[in-house]
Image (cartoon, rainbow, N blue to C red):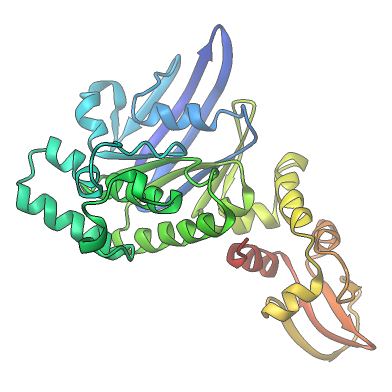
Length: 319
């Protein structure tokens, strides 16, 4: 993959206090890169520095191999879509006009703008004839956020920045929009930098996940590697919380087919055995010391579960 964005020894201070400290990371072209961490970890500050809404106190940020400070920031922002939690559609503009904002600024012809708006509406299952002339107040929260995503995509940007875009929505809308992001990413291949405090959302969306705490990057890896090899207890706690909050048991994985089948196997010395009612959080704890755990139903070992199966299950789970 080609490097698109690089943070090199980046620091950010507010009122003399570090909110970002010696941040080094790269974001590659075409990936969904997720920044995750608790409130105050520096996720949004990091995101805002990518499009110049906030300037680093020290260090350098590169975009397409060129220092960000060498760009005309206004023109560069036109090439970066931005989706916020506060949907921020222009209330007096129609759906079509909202989608066309950046293409119009870039000088696209009227016919080309209209064609693009209709194409995008069709892509997300909104009939153009029904929706193009509606005002934002005539849309549900989920529909408004869909239009916000389309507005960010409309000018074919190199990257889309998404800051907690679904956290204010109900679970059904949030799940639907997560699926939409994955679908649009598959369709257009646009690089996405996505901020969330929710590890379940990060697992579902991320090609790679950067876990942050108090302005520092703790670990950056694929979701599979983070689950299998968390660097420390802080990283591990995000998965613990996700699993515990869902009150999952081994039988949930078995019913979904997220296990490796075994027939009439005896317990191996390098594993542990559990039953169908064992909470998944206990399985995750056992995986610190064992490569997998074996599942016993009555007197028979029917299969085994490891980090790979837990990851696959969590990445497919819906609220």
